[in-house]
Image (cartoon, rainbow over all chains, first blue to last red; front, side, top):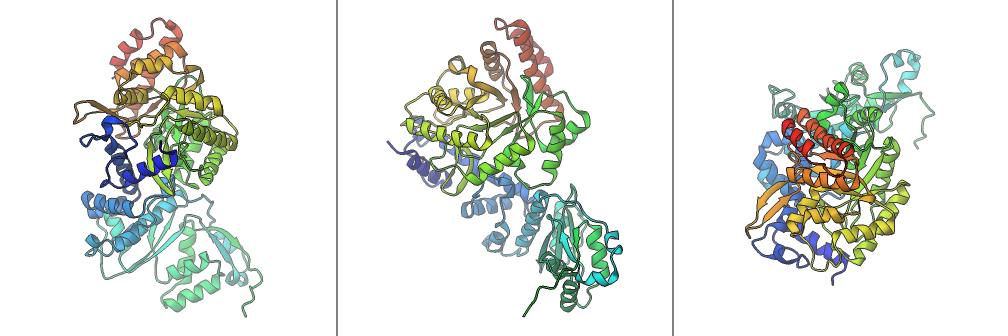
Length: 262
Length: 295
């Protein structure tokens, strides 16, 4: 008599590999070659996991079509099955998988569209926090501004892309069906969900570095300097205003003693 | 808030707004715990508001109670946190397994009914009830295969587990019909033998019917349509012997309009009312007539 562990091991292996026969531990008629009974479990598993990816990556599905999406999803599930019962957040590696998925080699931007949707999914389920208005800054002495550190919203996500990832997403998600897609222009994206709806934005010049440094805990002046160095067109006033407008700032921390760097 | 012996409904995101806008007279709602295991965002926003006005039942689908391997303590902690946050009137899980090694298989997989499995399931329920500090209900499964080494009937298995762990039972009447049809036993006899005194909740759902290549009928627990008349009849039979219980309408796929779903809860409530007012002798005629009108 097989142990429970062995029985489940054999069952799980056959479940994941349609090339294997149904497990020998199951009774009678379900083991016959013409029986579909074990396939019910195989189908339930695969169809429900594909569905999870469909609901996580709706724009990508729209972009590539249903048949291509299903085939890609199935290959991804075989390679990188979920390891947590919290399927809300399954699909982290789907972008990377698509980067190397041979049938997608002619559409090299699919991976970034998947990464943008993954960012949106994470923003959707991220912790909630109240945003600050920009007048919080006006109350501070100007001399203090340079050393301020910002706590940013837990839902905030950044994505750097050499493709026009936001335009591609907007045109296929239905958010902006007429979005102009200029394939030669990369876009940096920011996703944030300050209340109920996720907001997906194209970041202006230097924004990715600026917000990235703020997220890492750098003081305002340091983040601005780095952004200006990377992109001379960086405009601090525009970015500050923008950050507060989208609800990205949840706390302003006064300048503390500089950490010694020697 | 305790769950009343009325009809409840599986809560779906598509219906958040209509529920909050119209406050329908539904006895209670049930959610799949795993759908609320994100840190924040709209799911919690809406559930918090709905919870203010309705009793809530928490139904886990991913703990793998029947797994040979130890329970996932991180997942159990998530379940505990959710139960602390929403204070559900009932917490339930399935007689099934869904994780092997570190792979989550996302289906409610069947167990062999052996003494070893009784021990495993009871130990896992012990642990779950210890962490959640409350009794948990265990649901009878819908099955498509059985195992050669099963030595106990499903009911004996459930009874043994309930005795050892102190858990209650969730009787899914649709699962009874699905499993009975697929395994070739009588659904009525199963209902008649079920320990209804241990039952804290009933599930009602729709199933699909397929024809097997071998000629037999295969029922699939699809939750994608209205409750079948045969299931209503089994439900009436359950109520007649066990009395009114919290009864959930489960409709998870191919969701209909809110009105259709709501009508299903009214049908269930008519069965409950017929039981309360007519007594156990004559449960069927009133609800079945009105049920036809409600369709």
